[in-house]
Length: 257
Image 1: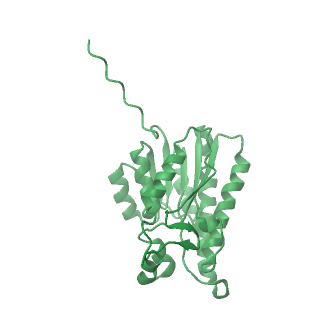
Image 2: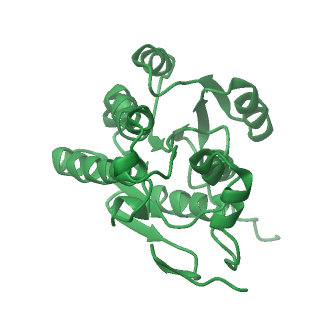
Image 3: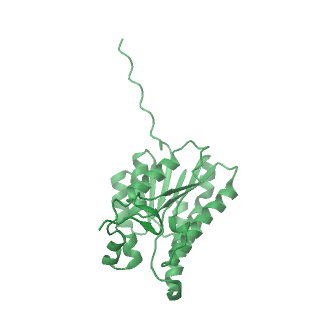
């Protein structure tokens, strides 16, 4: 008799539900697409429902409008979820590149509302479901800007330092519980919107990446996120720093003429 064909191995995310915030573009969109490919049931949250819906339909996920700066929006989002195994706190961004002496406090408020308080709101709302899953993951998309200070745009570096210490504190508070706390801290990532939102000028945004050979792209970070949340659950990736080869540090970037 012919040998039986072995059954295919299950996808790493089979049977697990992953929530991705800020999923309408950039790293969030790439992460949602990658997790869906890995077998996760993906819930995509963001403010721009039109873009979110198009992506969700393409990857077989579920689009739910979410504004992480609104308590009411976060509560409604959480109430519509029956199960959560993975939370990717990705919603964030930089909104200026001004020195502290010229600080726009509205920009600072926006930065903290989205990057820090938004992550706190969503994590707090979904933590009961993550605990109930028996093997939950809270992943924060931080930044190398949260690990070192540099001049210009302190509203962003201060906020990402806040995300870094939020992840560290939560990990201490949840030790012994069935929930991992993971932080991925990317360096230079070229996306369609990040530098443009920060500078407000297309030419200035392009100059950020000028001459840099192969900066990271959103798919590179999504790959790191997917790897971290599919390790055996006794393995915790506390912090992963990922940069392009052309960037040795925040201030050391190789640029070709």
